[in-house]
Image (cartoon, rainbow, N blue to C red; front, side):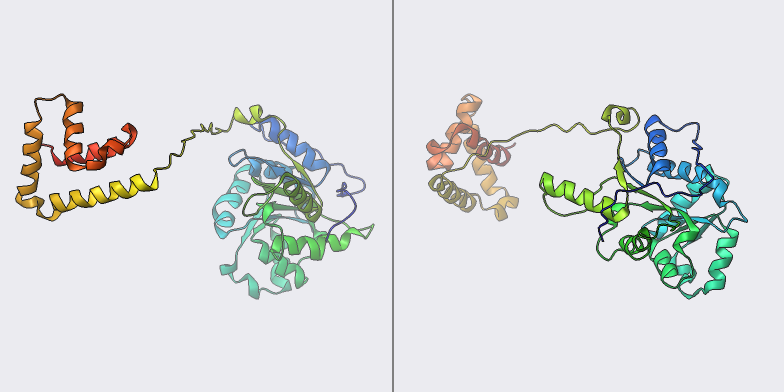
Length: 331
């Protein structure tokens, strides 16, 4: 559902102002993205390996004072796969923050949890890392409410389209509250290395339209580093080299003649009988008789003997046939 309004600052509290809590080793573009994310809903579009997760972690550190228990609020970190829940994002959060992190995926049996079990998770944890289908189900059953979440982080947010749980969370719960002036909505922070997800080629117009559609759905604005040279200091970029090979068509008549000559050669040589050395020795005798000639004349004359149509073959095409003869007459 498209919204006509631009992304706005969703106030966390009327009397509190967020302040950045950066990590000392953060890069300049990460700090810039953090400042942007503190002011408005943001989709960070940066190359793989540029440290988007670290920006999300610093954002959570900045919200930490609103999340610490016994606060009723939580932050939710959504990731598309179970592996990212268990091994990547969850571990990174525990490494770089002192927040209480809970990890959730389907095999834990979360589909069978009731409201009391979910409330216990909210009481015990400050950041909940999960796959999006789990949050969607919890919201639909009212086990969790959108207004108790202060930050939602969408990893690989370009998946937010159609019936994907990312899209359903935004449409069914976030956008539904946008028209309520008193609504307490979470800060939205998306991460992607590719803001559009499509097959085939796209025009410039359709490319930008898809970005606008993503921004509308996420009620966010895309941020990216304005200078590729800044990123290049930390991320290796490929330097592709383009080589163009000119296509040369072989005339149909010449092709057919060469194919015919190859068939004749196959019949003369009879590859299946090479083991007894008869045909090979015959060709070697031809080679020996011509050994007094220069190499170029040698092979040219041999090819003329085997291929009556050799006079039609251009020098660049003759190399293929010469290679065959060289192999057959190798001592």
